[in-house]
Amino acid sequence: MSRTRWRLILNGKSTGNTDLREAVHALRERGVQLEVRVTWEDGDAERYVAEAIEHGVDTIIAAGG
Image (cartoon, rainbow, N blue to C red; front, side, top):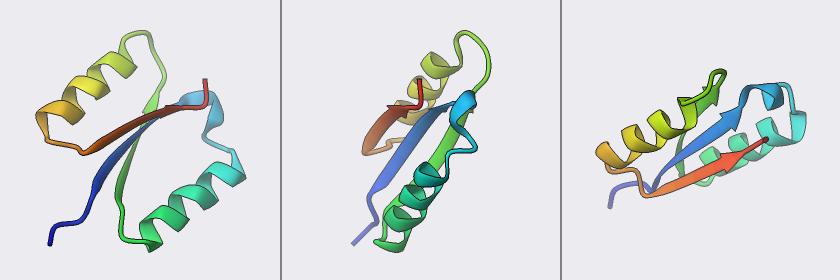
């Protein structure tokens, strides 16, 4: 059985959030294949969503805005 693939698209201003880092760690410990992409410029989020869809990611989450 393949692992669930998630993509977290995170506002760059939230990269230092300890709670968020702990949540990412907890999900990975539960077997979620979680990749994090950080937005810094206009258009990053849209590009990361398109990339996730192209790569067959199961769940896309946007956070930190």
